[in-house]
Image 1 (cartoon, rainbow, N blue to C red):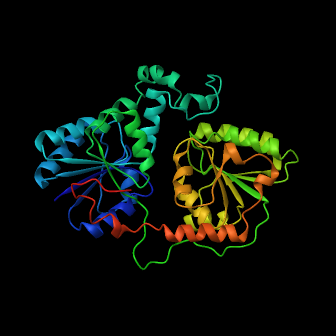
Image 2 (image 1 turned 90 degrees about the vertical axis):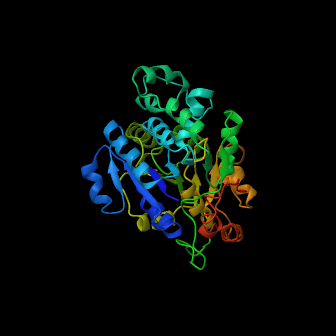
Image 3 (image 1 turned 180 degrees about the vertical axis):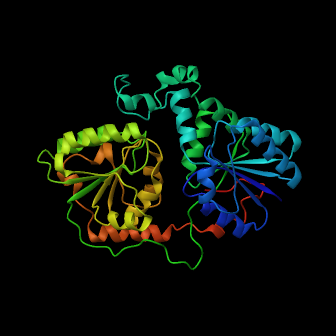
Length: 385
């Protein structure tokens, strides 16, 4: 067996390499798509092939690698516009190739928004707002096609080429199947899991809490609906008594700019944007000061932040449309609906110590281990959620 991984230039690509080499040593080829190879070569000093995959000559190099190495498993770590031609070329020389879509999220939800009218953005389209032009409003589909910036055409092709949808939340697979007539099958997969015997990371001592600090979203996300959250907080906290921490150190610049303007207008000195990148340990230390977190996404996003907060005693609100709300409730967590539960200042009361302990116990009872899915990942069967 030989496995080709097609990855985007992203901060967490080193983790998958470590785990796949652990479970399938010497069987992996990792190709990172980057238009700035000079910058990424220093980030990935060994074990990765870094190429601008938009260039036909580089796609030809990868096809030749697949032929020479006998690649029979292709893993798409997130979908990209360059991939349909490459996947077709690789399949043309190996009819037994199996394609695995290692799901991230943006690829499905962007396609659902443009193609199916799936509502992800609360605010109506307003061409006078700069950030509206980067958000997936269905009305922009034809404009983006004219500008050659429309990605769902490539995503739909790739969805039809994939044999397996690989993710830990089966709710996204069900959403895919409900909206697209595809024969794709489901496999359980998680980028971040645990090794047997390892102590779970970043678990802090639980403590009695009085709400003084709220966090809104986790980045300058296209889907964060910051305005909706700000308006609700302004209504239920008219005295502006609570601090509002808003991470904006990464994400979309136009969203960041708009969010800063709105946050300052609503909350003045109680608006605390995070604009500079924090090392992982420093960020998690900061999260210990958060008593309540509100996520405005109407889609699955920010799961790493959410589970970190749930296990460490933070009260979390999600949107009803976000299938993570059902996912975590099905696992037994105490987690709250933005639409149904966030009504007044009493709603923002922090979790009791007993409630925090309940969520900590849920976390420990639902730990995911690599051994539970990695050894069986390439077996030709549909795995249970």
